[in-house]
Image (cartoon, rainbow, N blue to C red; front, side, top):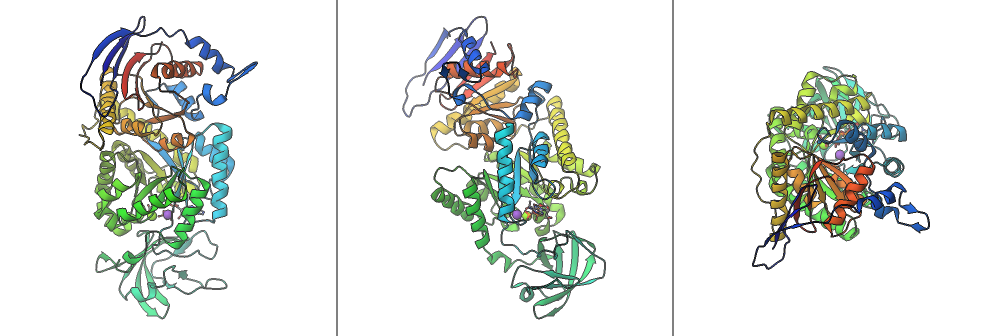
Length: 563
Ligand SMILES: Nc1ncnc2c1ncn2[C@@H]1O[C@H](COP(=O)(O)OP(=O)(O)OP(=O)(O)O)[C@@H](O)[C@H]1O
Ligand SMILES: CC(=O)C(=O)O
Ligand SMILES: [K+]
Ligand SMILES: [Mg+2]
């Protein structure tokens, strides 16, 4: 292993190299000068001609840098420090599936588009995926796609075409497992689970959508279960159903249902075929199902790098939380169903625990459901909703998610604006107050090389805060080193340079990362010169900006002013 300190005039540069070898005996400290950066000009002219010098065609790929169009504007307008660190996920539904609507969400800061396989057909989802791709291709975004499985929990059927139906206090409704050929009789709900009529008992409480509407079972007649509405509200198509007996959730049979149903496997095949970036698995109960899915994806599509997100929304997933998160590539705090399975007042503590476990294990975490529920109908959020969003940002979750607000609400763009502005404000407040928690991060690396990367990232983040640098640059092929830096939640943004578009899209889910696509070599000097030239040509950085650069090829840290 060797340690070098470099310095140049007029700019000052300090470099620490930690090159990892499996065997090493000595450490060396040297001090010398690097070449001046006068090679910048020639690179600048190449980039300015868009990679096509007359008579000497250069592949666009080698001389350009790709960054999200909105991030670019944000960086230019607000400077590095004020960029948003918390990522935003939007569920796409009828309110947002058009190309212009998707573009409006991208302009508003959507980092990930989520499609929920509970709703709509595969053809419908395929059109949405293609539109997001087109948006990325034509408008320079890197919006990632997350496919969320239906899971085999119990839910209602469609409401005969109605978008919602009101259940009034005291009304008697029939919950039936029958298939109705023609129109649905009045006050009738279809249940997708054949064992339903056998499993419920008179006196059970039936919760729709985690308790948004409640019924009490009053009579069982063959496949029909008569229930009286005790808490009125709106019934939405395919809403989730849970039933409770003597104050606890009935889940004996439920627990026997497979996490991934036959329909889910077909949806997963569809997702693999479409090359989605994330697959989120509903109602995960154990780590086994995640491992199984990951090996299935690897066998099905060896070249794909689809990340698997575990949705934490059941009692079992909380019981096996650590092992599930360890096996996954990320997690979602799916508060909608979670709140139907555990008492509501336990959800906030569960959220905090899940966010912390994910951070410790270096997995991205999304806080989801009802963040701005009232904005489905109204253009402004409640104060309580703003406080809830603030709390998720303060916990430093990687991402916040919109569900009904963006899928079928009346104000999807306004809801996204609220998430964006609350995130920015709380992040700034946190930095100004220097109130970041001193969370002791335990080691996640297993090999010696991984441990080196981790120590480098921890040190780089600490140095970045201490020296008040403008940005951390990380050159990473797999994205791993970028996520280790993100885990430290430093004060400055992290510019993550990566060679493949799919890694770039996936990094879009992680806190504080600004992913760029750039082709680079093993030679950091060349990489830095090239990056400085390209970013300066686009007015994204200027001479004198202080940056720390780390790389997973060299396992190095360098501190420098942009020449
Ligand atoms: N593709 C779609 N087509 C029609 N409606 C949709 C679609 N996606 C979402 N919605 C509507 O938006 C609402 C909220 O979306 P969300 O994805 O949170 O649904 P959910 O069923 O509550 O979530 P989950 O099934 O993951 O627990 C849904 O209940 C549904 O009414
Ligand atoms: C998102 C989701 O699945 C839930 O909150 O239940
Ligand atoms: K789902
Ligand atoms: Mg759910």
